[in-house]
Image 1 (cartoon, rainbow, N blue to C red):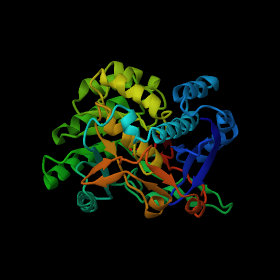
Image 2: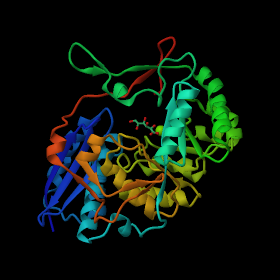
Image 3: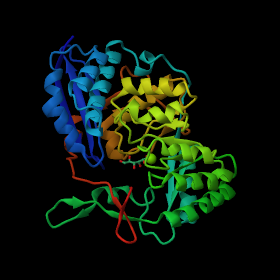
Length: 406
Ligand code: GCO
Ligand code: MG
């Protein structure tokens, strides 16, 4: 069996998605997600110009060898562009191998370790009434664990609260190219406000509902330690990305001050980014995405490494991971023993039409389905009807204009 084609499809059914399709001489196809939000075309070029030509003629079954040759052979290791490109190849090859075996991918990863995959959804509101409505809406959709994000008094635009499409398109300029929207930030106001939000949510929804919160890399270690402590009475499932965690050592301080569970890693690309965090058990959940971590092969290694320190999995699953990347994640979630929870934000109806998938969402739980491979098909005609649209993530500024972490 040989690879005869590797092509990239870019489509924007509500937001941009980049998909690699690998085809074999037997006519078997495999899909991989290569979406890097706000920098999509860099990965498209990496795949089209540098990786696809190398794949032609290779044996698609040699997943590990292909992964290692792309990683080591580039010489320039790691980084989100490289690792998203390698991830797409890795997932597409797993898709092919599982289709040839006529098995859903999770069977090749060791088989099911559970019946279904627990998820959490996003609730948000500018104020408490809006937030409570959003929580109720998620519960009505079946979610049994909920991430809570709110506006902060005095701030105009805060992460996770305002409309995604508006944020993603940015501001149209006279030259036709969007610019990033500017959000505003005040750490003191956020630290004073957030515990009162969780107090109100607990009063409204009771002690049993698992609640999560994402600080989106905005705090220093001492600020994160304070927030973790202040949130302890409200029994969070986790506090996510409390600090910009490339400063892994900074988590020692946070960890020593609070028992609020910590989740980190959605912007990490390799196991090395987690080394101190896992070895010293500074976190409770590893948050890497299949799509940004080089695929299923390296993520399985991270999960096995994390398991030695009783750390659980929590694969990144926002709207900007395509259904292809999400499907791969759900197969891993079903198979690995140290599964924790899966983020699942759902997709626009147009996205569901372009990417038809075997995975299902019922009562707040996902299942990858029994279709051979990862169980996703991409409709090229429908994809072409949604052309690429330049988009940026926002930037974040303090009141005096200083750029802050977004
Ligand atoms: C999350 C993330 C996302 C990211 C997004 C950036 O926890 O889901 O923080 O909301 O901001 O993936 O592209
Ligand atoms: Mg996050």
